[in-house]
Image (cartoon, rainbow, N blue to C red; front, side, top):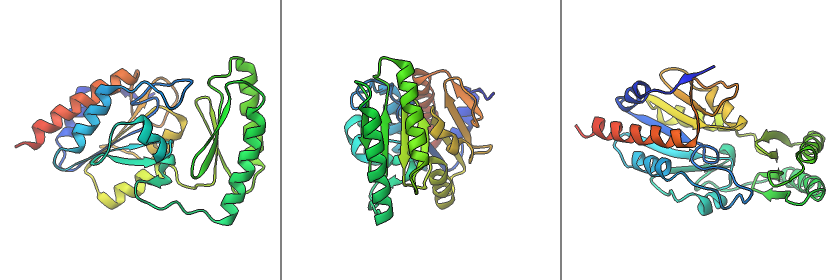
Length: 255
């Protein structure tokens, strides 16, 4: 298991020449809700990430499974904070390009998930540029929700060109090959930070944790098996950690 994130860890990050700080959104900077477009945002964490983005030699951003269109609604942060959607497949400003095979695969995924969602009130299909996502958080019968999730996993595995990803009360069928890990690895190679901090809570964040080695720090939010090397208990602790880092970084870069 990873060790708890400490002030000493954050102090060390604050002292490096060029720092990269990237956070997941849902489950890290915001809580969950049966209404995905109305989630409780941790203001302390969001404001601290925004402050970090304004500091010298510091890059800060959000790497989310949401589409950028959704982030526009639920997340108040804008430039200079980086925003990358769809698990790394949708960097801000990049065109959305799909070929005919990908469109056909998404149509097939849409049909299958729509059929499955019809089995229970509260379930719905989210349509993102590169993905279709079955949501079951609001399904009251959790056994039925589990059956629906299994049906979605099975259906997705049978569609050519579709990757299947399981998250917290969601099953995502995707034509994108990008992951949070691939985006983070490529961005780090292009910008060469001296240290990187990445925070996330879900299974999709594990690909990002896997590309980080000391002195980089990956922070798992919550208790679960993980490739991260540090952990915090929950969303409020993320806010406290980012506030501490923002103040320490401010002091380190003003001299």
